[in-house]
Length: 168
Image (cartoon, rainbow, N blue to C red; front, side, top):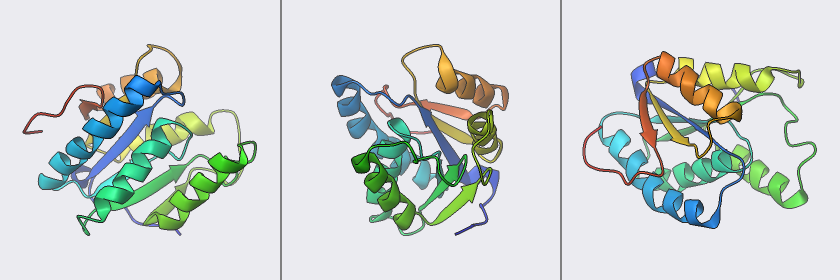
């Protein structure tokens, strides 16, 4: 289900690691709803998740829960390819399918996997957003690349490990 995104000012993307410690998972589940709600009060309605394991999955699930309270909110999945879940466990695949079924729209970077499709997806999410909510605890890998790219695009950055204060 393809979807047209709203203006860049109304969009926020997520980026984060696949592996989340129990301590960080608790912080994320406490802080992320407040960040999302705060952005929504300033007119952000489209939340773009990359559909990967870990932070992307958790962020998508929290957006879906927050959408129950705010019908203007939309979850958009920006997926690198149609079968990114092909080698995932049964439980991860089921969670992924549930998120896909509940999403307001899905946007595929490519039909098939190719080396670089994940990076292309990450750049596209940042290019279509004015905000980026991130979970980063290491300065390496795809998350660090995406955070650096989002900063170069002058996105407003929101670190999910820092408790949310008022204002954006």
